[in-house]
Length: 203
Image (cartoon, rainbow, N blue to C red):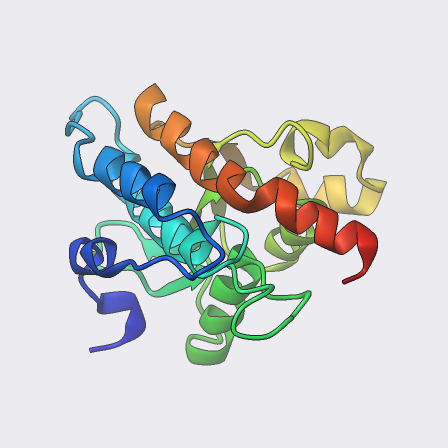
């Protein structure tokens, strides 16, 4: 069984916070994810929930709370998954969730891309949005908006060539329901300020 095929319900139950991460907050977010009601009117809910589980896993390990996965339409399992790993197990400035998922895709499925969707729990940053645009993946769906650092809402500020390439892609918020959107944002905010401060101070 590959990492992408691991049961996400099992992964959610197995999450244990690192010593520096508040255990009560992780437990509360885990509970909220477990209690999200299934909504048949939200076609992106399942994969948005899965990305949010990966995000909580990342936050509990001491990283930014962002998770991502790449799926093929109609497939029961994702092709690739990625959880943010910038700070743990070691510092890696490239280890954003979307970057890790896309890297895994390109290493294992070099010719894949058309007809695939990248789901991410948070609006991508400039680096991750550019990586998606440069990839062969057709669509990007994100769960929560990132007002402070997201680039989708600022796409018009990208250089012309990036905007031209992006014009043929689907880049949009996931249709997943407001409760899941709220949870995904709370997962990100669990570690964001502390890690932002660490980057600013170059620790």
